[in-house]
Length: 65
Figure (cartoon, rainbow, N blue to C red):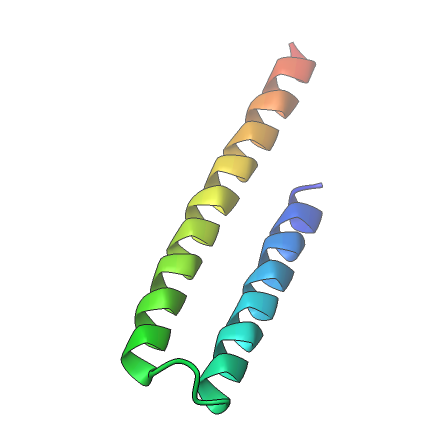
């Protein structure tokens, strides 16, 4: 279950990265903005992934007791 959740987060990150890179290729976003936005999005995804894994771990621990 944790692997599936992390896979989902990775897929979302790839899609967002592809979208931002497409905007850069179309010259709608400058490189500095792209780097800043990508860094922020990956940071948010990282926090969400860690929180999700912790929640799943806590649920497994609660079921064992």
